[in-house]
Image 1 (cartoon, rainbow, N blue to C red):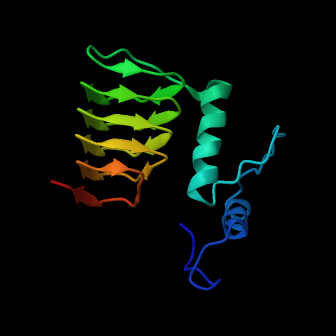
Image 2 (cartoon, rainbow, N blue to C red):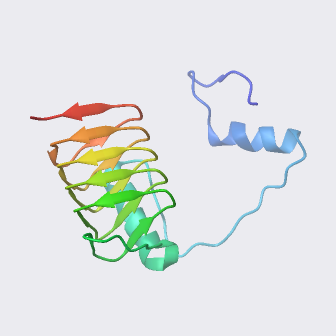
Length: 146
């Protein structure tokens, strides 16, 4: 476990590297074909799209659901009467019903019902009901629009 943060109350990547070195871990590098900046929502979604197109896509079939590739649908995802994609990642345990989702990342165990989302990022355990448009919601958030 890392010690308390010393840099303005935040951990820096160099702190993690130092922790790894102190615990005998190896730091490896790999060449990449581009710069994948995930510091802003727009660039995070763009990076998700690039990774999906480069082979991170994972697809399952769901009766009554329309999928537009590329999509990544992890294990334990439930989808009913919905349209998903393109460029959508649904993380493990997500539950999507009566919704349309495009160019978005939906976190683990999040629930999306009667929503039409695009260019959105929902963290883990988010509940979004009746949401239309785009959103950026952190873990354990809830939005219901009647």
